[in-house]
Image (tube, rainbow, N blue to C red; front, side, top):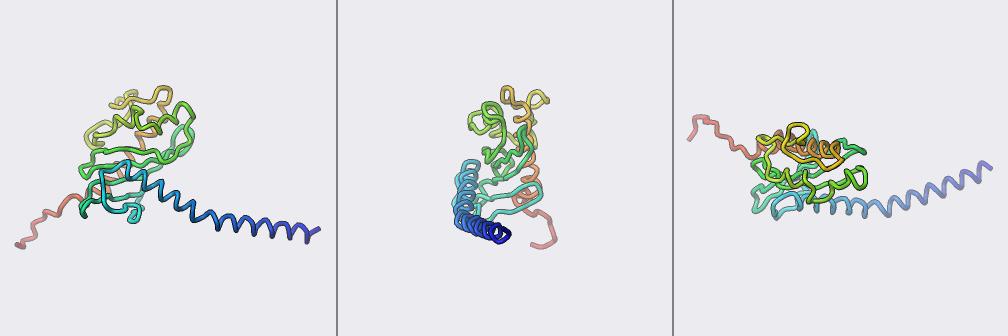
Amino acid sequence: MVLVLSGICLVCSALLGTVYAVTKAPIEASEVQKVNAAIAAVTPAFDNVPSEAVRDVEGGQIYTATNAGEPVGYAIKVSVGGFGGPLQLMVGFKPDGTVYNTSVISHSETPGLGAKLVDENIAPRVQVQGKNPATDNISVKKDGGEIDAITASTITSRAFLKGVNAAYEVFKNNCMAEETPNTEDNGQE
């Protein structure tokens, strides 16, 4: 009996390992493609491959989009807690800190309610475009902000806007320093 059970476990383990080995590369390629599509959706046109130079920082990941060697935008990937679980977003910023666009990478929100957030034309996603979190109140109107919530999905809308603000913090702490030239006068000409 022990030999039979051991044999069955060995065969099942071998099959599971084989399936993992065969599917690992296509799954990773699919994830890279999903990230590249999200970056392209949230940044101005670029000529580099931002996903090849990802920077992991506290609070998220940064993808720098460049054109002719100059930064044209930054895609910041963050994860926040939504109503149904984690909400993973890609938020694109212009070099001046203005939100260019957003993309929902993954979510666990309620179908028909919070899941509407994947629609590019839903109010919170449209209304954050062109806003700068440094000067604009990026929160729902119920909380004194400027952004309309998704009807019957205020928690999801708050989570989305929390993600936009979290992405801005990552941008502010890591990307703005790149844009600010060193203007110290050190006595040399």
